[in-house]
Image (cartoon, rainbow, N blue to C red; front, top):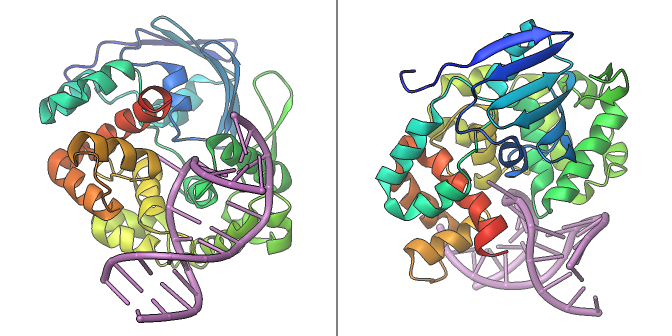
Length: 297
DNA sequence: GCCCAGGGCAGCC
DNA sequence: GGCTGCCATGGG
């Protein structure tokens, strides 16, 4: 990508150093509501559990360090997870060009990247997310991982529990899931796991479909509606044109574009798809985080 | 006790 | 088709 400034990547003692990160703020990326399996240790210092690994990420200005990562893991996992090869300077320009009204949100959240997360973990996490707050979602994801996921040795030599794969979660009973505090969503998780396990709904199938068909297939899972499907498409399947509308997006979009009038989520989504097109997912994330942390705080 | 949270489903009309 | 009440759980 022409606009991506050169980053220098090196590795020593299982610590990867990425020097020269731009349009990148670790705290914004992790805490903008797209992922749930991490803990804050300090300012711009986080433990991140994903893809069967537990690492510490630490950012100082334009330097990102990943503790507990080999160069192979960076190249094979973290570079794509963090969407490092995408030019966010260009993306932000394009979003603002699509509508100058987004400049405030983009400037406020200028370090956001959209992560490329594991499909199955994203699917289950966002089924859990419905009608829950972000801290509660994080706790449920941690509960499920601790109960059903593999133990791995993390960056500091301590044990972490990674999110279970389909086979592992397929063994879980509804009662065991309820003990993870997912409440009425337990049967939804069972249904989703069965759909993936049986091959009815897989990443491979979804990747072959256009976004409307993929969304339709996802929504055959009980507990997956329009919003959850869009989150899975955006964060777990790389479909950057998806535009999830939750209560926060409804609020900010009604204020910005519908004269403060009560508007159906589907109408808001249709409006946004028309306005932002392929940039929808990015625009949505800047607006969502800005609405939640700044505008309606 | 109330209301709300990155919603969706079943049961109505 | 659209609208309403309900679904667990925890925090403010």
